Image (cartoon, rainbow, N blue to C red; front, side, top):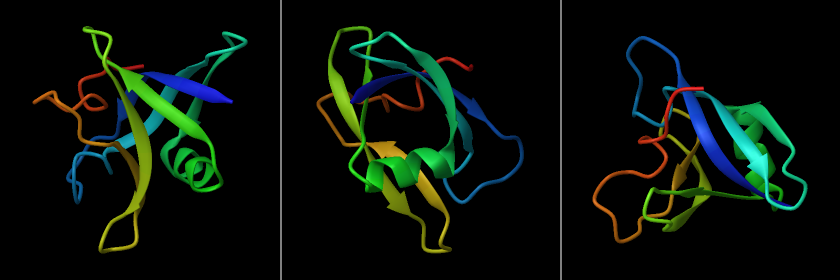
Length: 95
């Protein structure tokens, strides 16, 4: 199963990095068009277990999500660097 991330929700306050500020990710499943939302840590764990998620920018370029852990042990997800200057995940609209 693959899902496309369609929006993000950011928590207020100061954070270790901008990805840690993401508290929730909205998505749509490619095959079924099922939609949902998943908390950041849950998404991290799902990707670690083999799930595939990606972001598509307005030009149609896709970048997959990878699971990372900050030096403080905080689990988060981010996109793999691609040819775009802006960050695909952080540029998504708020859920």
